[in-house]
Image (cartoon, rainbow, N blue to C red; front, side):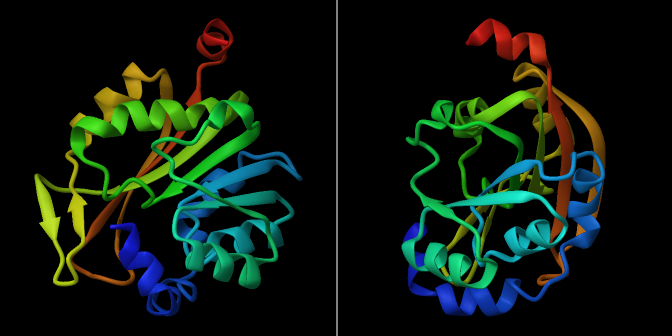
Length: 199
């Protein structure tokens, strides 16, 4: 799946970078202190990095596809880490918030809980998590070969509860790129006492 984003990075940039992310990033930005650090996982084109930077935050990207990572650096002026979120050691990082806009959309249903648990180790204190995934049942197969995992709300929210993530806000938005897609957006906060007991 990562080969697609590395090979089609320019096409992906053109289709995503110019979409205004205000509608889904504003609820998170309103809760963050000025200068807060944000790790944008699966930062893609760097669109959200640039938006957060302009709002006065300190965003850092995380991207698997090297070509996308480089284009994100160029267009956002932000640092971008390269790695595979399924194996990367996030416990060495400390961020006030984590952003996962479509980052886990290709992750199989059985793998999403352990991967999200691993990623949340990058949170500092009672950190925030903003995550979006596609609503639906089963899988969606795109003409370009990509496979998307679809989620009913109940299944996702059960996983969040098991990971000690408290849901603060839920949204549903029709994709600005593909009108047939509905994105579920979750703004969450990690329970501090659970973080402290695990570290």
